[in-house]
Length: 245
Image 1 (cartoon, rainbow, N blue to C red):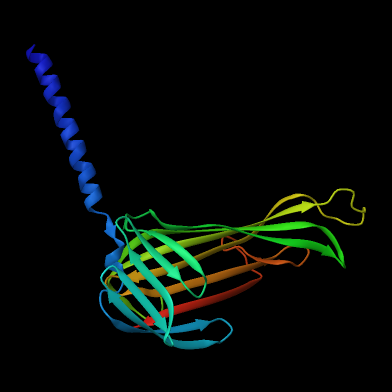
Image 2 (cartoon, one colour; image 1 turned 45 degrees about the vertical axis):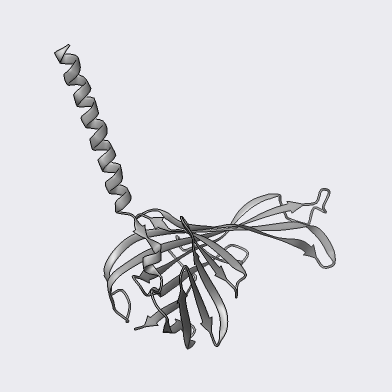
């Protein structure tokens, strides 16, 4: 009987330790609200591209209870609405809604955009040979937490989050039956763009850096596409955006 009591006591201790561990893990989660602007402010940004284009712009930010509004040139371009478990980001320019997780840990997905499908006709002169479905998905994950960012010309310090985004586009072709032999098209799926980009958010400031470096490759027919996993590139392009503190 004494042995049975000891076994039960040991099991209870294990369950208690397991519960404490899960609580600790939960408490280490990051509240994404802390990485949005915490007060009314004006943010200045600098954009540079590989073709030599540069641009400066300002965003005017208003914080009001559980909402944040962002204006550019006096036009509303973005809003954030804080809910119990999510943050809803509305991009007015792109007519795009992102549902961000409010509590997140390293390696977690911040948001996934709904799959977008664009249908285009495949034509030869005035004849429609079939259709081409372009399917696009984009997912952004928290890669790591930093105390400084020194990878670029502009340096940043303090509490920073690094996010990695992957946009994967595929082309699915649907070809009509009984096409002439000289039309060399087949049904099926082929890879299109695979675009990797990064963005950084600073505590109480919000977005500070956006990095998009593109590796362009060409297939045998000379068609170009983005494949940021390729070891060799036929062309390289970039677009970098920096917050000017």
